[in-house]
Amino acid sequence: MNKRGKVQFWLEFFSDLVCLTVANLISYVVFHFAIPKILDYPASEWARYFIAMLFAYIVVFAGFYSSLDIKRRDRRHEIISILRNTSLTYVIFSAFILLIKSPIIESRYMLISSFILFTLLLFPEKYFLKRWITGFFTTSKTAAIVGIITTSDIADEFIKGIKQDWSLNVSGIILADRVFAEAPAMAGGAPAYTREVFPKSIHDIPVVSCDDSFMEWIRSAPLDEVFINLNTDNDENLQELVEELEDMGITVHLNIPRLARMLDESKFDNINCRVYAGYPMATFAAAQHNTAALAAKRIFDIFAGLIGCIVALIAMALVAYPLKRESDGPLIFKQQRVGKNGRLFNIYKIRSMYADAEERKAELVAANKMEGHMFKMENDPRITKVGSFIRKFSIDELPQFFNVLKGDMSLIGTRPPTIEEFEQYESRHKRRLSMRPGITGMWQVSGRSEITDFEQVVKLDCKYIDEWSIGLDIRILLKTIYVVLIHKGAE
Image 1 (cartoon, rainbow, N blue to C red):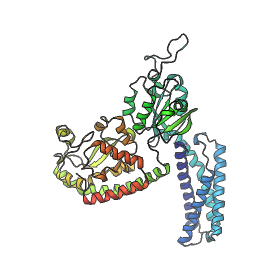
Image 2: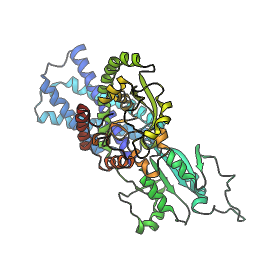
Image 3: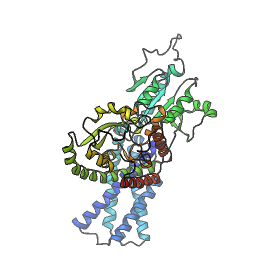
Image 4: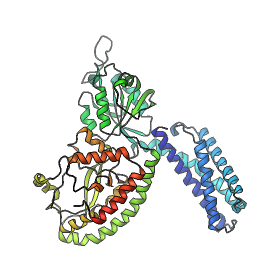
């Protein structure tokens, strides 16, 4: 299943499950309290009831799920699908509770009313889900941000097709006519495009480059994926380009005829194929993660974020007075950071420095103990006394749970750089940003104050990305708790 299919599958799975839950809850409230028709059953029977219902729902959803793009489903298809799935769910459910001899099978009001409500709720749910997906998903944080490298003679058709995929947000187009081949000729031998007449946009998407400076845009722009579809026979430097994109942690889609000519020398793994906009494309990336595991990670982040935000509010209330008394300035320090694949966001911390800390940073560059594109120094004079205390116990990091809840960060990940640091990155450094940044991570639990080489930080971050799993996150979280308790590596 491709990425769009996986996103659609889980969106429909959880939204349909919500409808099923709401239908049963409404039925219970109405026929137990408002119109008493349901007998009092013990909690164990209701637990068996809902387990049986969940089992029936999962079986039917998995067995009869329509993988057809939700944008292409007509009204007839949706009606048939809803009636079939709700009927089968309740048939299997009824058979199951009959087999386990649950007395709730006698509650006809509960069964019939929840079945009718479930069916009726699915119609508006499908309608609004379709509208949300087709109208808002493309510009949401969940959509993949992509760039397209193509030639002017096929750009219009290819980009129009790519825009039909609602899971992709195309942010820029590179017309590589001059980079990989001469521009195609029109009648009379004149070039179809010159530098002056290259279009500024195609299908409302800006053309960001039409010469060999396009890598500057790719290195600085937030990009998750790049499509390369070139109608030219010149493959010189193309493999080098694809390797550099992979080193940056960007997923690459390359048209298959071109890949076939490069395949003998290719060093790429994890290649799979799919048709995009009518063109067969091979997709490969440095690391590919299980979609269900990533969804579980995000769900855990939401729960952890809610708890963390409560703890952060308490901590902020406790340190507000001594911090404000010691030094002027806001309680919360806000700074723009670079997140997943170059996305910008505001990170939140409890202020631990004097208000003019950023202005004084230039004076202290010589004391930087980090080798590379990070700044850290011992006995930083910009840190207040209260700030030193809250840093020792990592209390200053607590407001980042609000970033986790918003989706800018994860509980576990890589540390987000400042814009100034990011601007000094080489292509390979950007790969450490190919996952959502985190409050803690492999670098933090490896003794962050003892690590002074930025390349070692990058190595640890890439190791985390390559080896990521739910189990690894759990191990890092447990190590983080230990590190915080013994104050190891904190400054």
